[in-house]
Length: 299
Image (cartoon, rainbow, N blue to C red; front, side, top):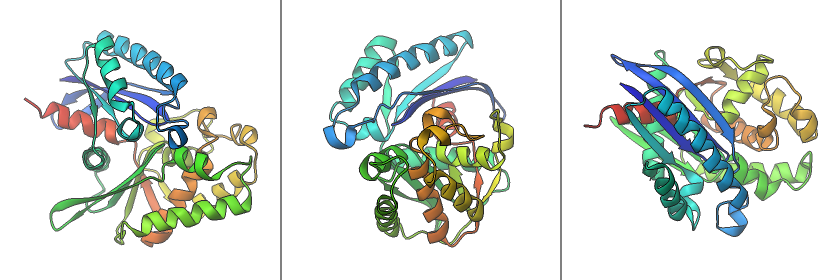
């Protein structure tokens, strides 16, 4: 089976097309377009007008890729921004009318399951871990307890936090402290167990790329990378001392992500601290791969 998933996120739209052979998916295409669909959502309650235009352009490109690969099964999923915006369902209907594919706006519990599936099935060394999926709008945290999955979703996404707390470039110490206090408060409600950590999402993969000083992003090197808290803290200190324009020039930093990377890194640092872990495994297997597994099992 050749399957394609398009994920409409708060910060970007991503595509994964893959062929399933046995129990394994082999990627045929990966794409990411930064759209900022959720920019301003916190203050307006609505999706960004420009973000919606960029999202439609990205989906149009991705649909052409899916067609060229002779996709047999396809799914479009929407996450935090689409869930929370007053016009999320209307925009999903617009996408369906234009492209003929239903947009599944995932409840946070289902998003968590898909992320957990993608992360754990792509890392053979992981047997019992806490998986966190840090996006632009929210962070899903998932683990197994008494043979069932437990999930906690908090609004501590990188876009949300940047808009809420950071008014200066680089952010002032008081802004950073306020963000940290808010993140701690949100994470305290999750009662994180002391288990090995697996992190997914653009902030986490960017930190791995920065740690390796990658000039060209290589998925295979990032996937399974062991990212220590010491490294996260070193990178965070550098980020908080640099204007966005300078941060964007560092090896491993995607230019479009630079503005939200410090806020996202604060979350990663505090998840490590509050779970009592000294490092985490970075996974490229995430909601996209998890969606493919669930799609392939449907009749």
